[in-house]
Image (cartoon, rainbow over all chains, first blue to last red; front, side, top):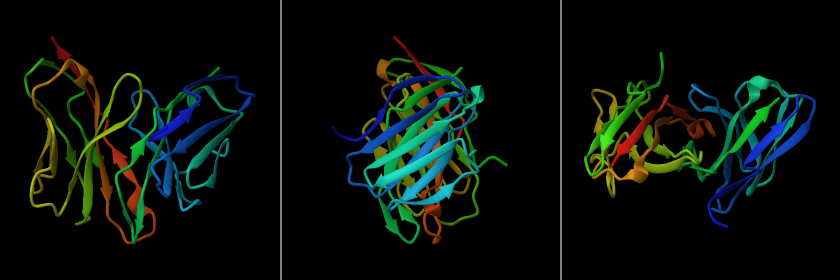
Length: 116
Length: 119
């Protein structure tokens, strides 16, 4: 495997379900990101993990819970979602070089989530 | 005010012709980076090209070139010799420089331009 992978690629869930999205990067990067892409809205940054520490939480509702067990893996745990949470969820990774400098972000193929 | 503006929601281009996608940005930070990504219908965001605010020359990557006009705060993407596989959404994004840890990780995206290449 190369690059950034995401599973599942498609997910349909009810509002009472609990599910998790998985992201894995094979690029040796030390920073990982979750983005949300809704129809007709710009891509929105949700969470940033740098060196496995969460450094950004962009006012995301608590029904989204990220987890970064190591620098290669990132999860997004979902529970009691709303229909408006239906979107494409994209994971990305990059190499952070310290002092605010970071390289290009590389994205995975995304998980298309539908909440019924 | 929006930080990244892409004024063309969609456009057609004839195969083998060149196309220019507009992007203007707004920042007061002297250090920033500009990116273009391509998103086919499959959903993956594919990195195309990068321009740093201090770069003296316009960036080029194969058929992609970036027309960087710093005074006008524009960073237009030029795709030469369009191919059918170039049909996709194209996003312009900006990363503002900062000495604050991880703030430099934030990418702000524009609304995108949909390109359809006609045979």
